[in-house]
Amino acid sequence: MPIATTNPATGQVLKTYDPMSDEQVDAAIERADLAFRQLHGTSVVQRGRWLTAAADLLEAERDETARMMTTEMGKTYAAAKAEVTKCATACRFYVANAERMLADEPADAGAVKAKRAFVRYQPIGPVLAVMPWNFPLWQVMRFAAPALMAGNTGLLKHASNVPQTALYLEELFRRAGFPEGAFTTLLVGSDAVDRILSDPRVRAATLTGSEVAGRSIAQIAGRELKKTVLELGGSDPFVVMPSADLDRAAEVATTARCQNNGQSCIAAKRFIVHTDVFDAFVEKFAARMAALRVGDPMDDGTDVGPLATDRGRAEVHAQVQDAVDNGATIACGGELPAGDGWYYPPTVVTDLRPGMRMWSEEVFGPVAGLYRASSYEEAIEIANGTTFGLGSNAWTTDPAEQERFATDLDAGSVFINGMTTSFPELPFGGVKNSGYGRELSAVGMREFCNTKTVWVGVGEAGAGAGAHAE
Ligand SMILES: O=CCCC(=O)O
Image (tube, rainbow, N blue to C red; front, side, top):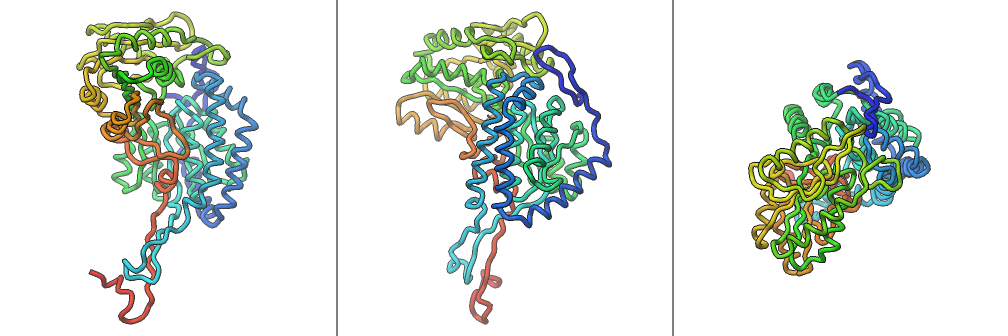
């Protein structure tokens, strides 16, 4: 895929970039390594000043940055502005909390026969971040803010269709005052990743992307014995039980499915509805989905803009067609629109069955699959009957059922009477083929820290037997 900005609303190529040479990449890795040594020697307070400056810049430049993102990948301008604000909020969250998250953690010295024992969190070095286009600023920021605050440096290989946003990020951190090399964008294709991650100066990798990309990174990192955090796809269940407020559930289901033009890893994708309320829910949900306004992402009145790529839209339509060809029913949408731009209508598909592509695959567009369940047990079986396990949603006002869902849903997060959302305060990540490791919160920051055990003996004969302990 060429490194280029192509406007999904028109299909027009606006700007192309030559990939960096191996020599340029090597020089960038060298700068990242040198910057790591420099950053490592700075205080959390100093790094916090730089990250605060980055948040200030994000807020001051919100509108133009949002316009750039909309032009590169088609999300609505309103959603893009919200994304910029969320990035600034995450920066401020880590500025406010990093010192506490990175503080030494005392352990019970007596229990380990020490005078003093504690855990110290230290940065590990340059980290390669391979990031997707769907939240082009946020996906990077949720890695970069904690990583830089911890004293790591970042090397970004962004998706090839968002080069301007990728370059903006490098500039942002530079202008905020971080040392040269602390955060660098590598304009390269995926074929360069093996070489970069194999470089001994690159200590770890984080990837948000497809399962295929995750397996590839994990393979390289396994060979090189490097830590990885992988946030891969999802096909999140959205379970609706008889006690749920159906109007509210249908309203949130619509947002949960069509946020970001339906292109979010944590979008609700499979709607599993108890048979007692199935027909009522489908009617309300399909009416809301059909009422969404599809159009120019820069217009204030638009709810759903174009999909980011022509190929992505073709794939979504092929998945819907496959379901229809095999007996599924369309409650709304499902027609490929004529004209310019990679638009796809909000679509609701019922009567899905095992064997259809939509049953087992992630659908990365505004398409909802509806499943009927006759009991709690069947709802859980359908919800967990996927190789994915990123987010999950359950709608019920019964407290006992809420507890059961929290335990039984096999996913990295469970949202009851709400939609899966990422917050800087909460860990974010998945299980099964949705990946491993966590982003955000203290857990995310410590993923790229050396969790160092420090044991201090009294240094006298017969005392502090740690080194000789059983
Ligand atoms: O695509 C993944 C989810 C992004 C988010 O909302 O944090």
